[in-house]
Length: 545
Image (cartoon, rainbow, N blue to C red; front, side, top):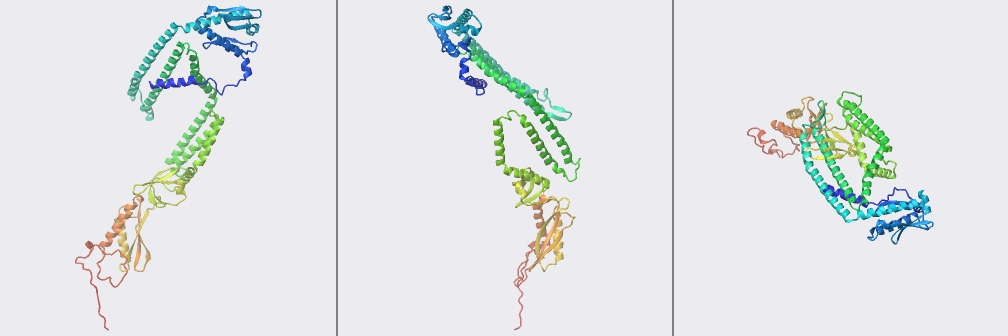
């Protein structure tokens, strides 16, 4: 029912639209006054006045005659038989009772190509017939007939709308039940082009629109019929029909006139489509490694295809633009300029990020899954596009970094050489001079070999980086091919260093020697101390005076 309400509202708006349009040609007042004017009754043209009489222009004469005919038609005292002609020497008056309807002159007869007598007789026949039709149209019998036809049309419309409403769910359920049985997947061998569910949805959408169109047409036919049943609204029926058919006729004519341009645009679209498909095939094979180009890496294939596809589309749009409907209109050009300025002012940062994304892609600074460090942020690359790069830290925090920021700062990539050369994990300890350095090397290498995912080859190695005042700085370097587990590996490595040094009874400390060192308990945990360990006492020696 809501479809009916909406359609009736639209049609009411159409009827309320003025007949004048800004696109209509402008006619001067003088030419309009000299043009033939129609004499009408109840909206029906009876005849045309083509010549002036005295100071009255044709339009003024026609309006005056029409006004008199309306008064005569509405008067119950005047019948069509009362209309007769009164001859004079140079003119003939057509009157009804005491009312003058019009005066016919020889100039009127010459304008119509008839004699005055013939023209008067034709006017008499037309006026009598019009008055008779008017009386019949406004008779009680005619109004009762119109009301009856309106009731019948309303009942018929309600029945048809009810049938559509009741049948639509049945049709919809039937089509849905056909999915997978009568409606099957559209395939080429094992490749599925369109699924049965998708085809079903398209058919259901078509049925839904057919239902709306059927309701619209029924309501239009109903309104046209009802308007024609009553004399007061009969003149609106052709107007409504004009409003309904004129847009369709105009659209069909516009489409027919636009077909050459449409064909040209279709050719451009087809050429651009096949060029894009050809590029996708070739660049796809480059990405798979089937086609090898020196200096072109496989990971460049996808971004290169996107850039080339964008250029092809931009070129196709540029070529097809002059052939688009309304492209030469000032409004279309104004919108184009406005969008261009808006894009230029509002997308400076976006364009900078896009350019940076392209440069970073061809720099091969990192890939998806690499562990990198940007500024103070360390994480794995989970997304990379033309605008941003997204990192996921070891705390599962996603950090979004604009590509322009990446391009302007240094990026540490822990994964780029890990598989081929191995990533070196390094940590430092400080041991006193009282522990032999060879023993410290053995303990550190042993701790590295105990750590999971530390490679046997290349072997871990030790660097003595400093000989300080009270201790030596030892740096342990160990290789791994698991850069994404750096945090866990460092933790395990530090644990193993503690265990190996404790097992060997070597204190991990930086002693600042003083004479009060005796008497302190060693820093080795209790479970690693020798059995019966007792902290040494202070040693005081006596000196001879």
